[in-house]
Length: 275
Image (cartoon, rainbow, N blue to C red; front, side, top):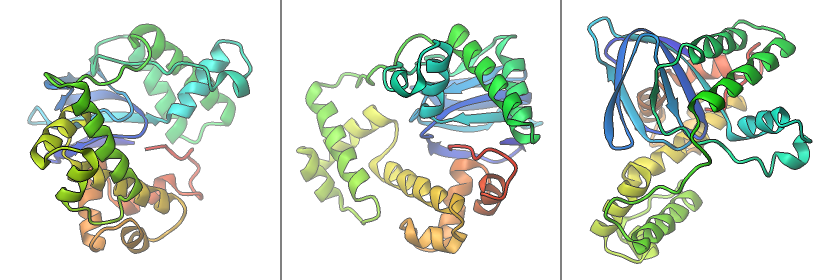
């Protein structure tokens, strides 16, 4: 995706993919991992899968950026190939990298990501796309990665709090289409509603209701790629109506469902992006 935003504010959300963005003009500020960050022109924003973040303009001229979303399986296979091992066996063993700096200033990463982005949106052939993907992943891992993913630590929390948050998440993932009362979620987690809310936010960076909505958005996004209409996707993903779905899709992904479907659908020349 590439966009120039002026007044749009992203609601706190996360992606089920790595996200690497180059800020070209202006500046964007966002909260990620407990701190307020700013990415100005020539800087790179880096998000691990499931990193919660928001975002808005930090300058009067807004901000223009290009972003590439890269699924964990894509990352794993590229790293296995770079290690010169058989992808079918090594892909399951390759440790996925962790990027602990949400904003990076690096003159090597910027052109590598821009070249990859240009190939993906410009209809380049598969050989060019693969070459630039390998070059970008290699540069990112060499210059920005700090190691394999770590379990998120709960500030001031205990192991029981972490387990409560995981139990609540498991219920949300299993029944995200249902309207789940807070009492039922707390019962599954084995704690009070207040304790669950605090533990869940500490573990996943958002409230349980936001997490459930995000699961519904991801489901709807997959339906759009499969060719369903926005109305069908809204209904099948558990949204009250199409306008409700449209509003939240834009707030979290920055584009309308229709724009996303045209860009990532089967008739597009682009490679579908695993948002």
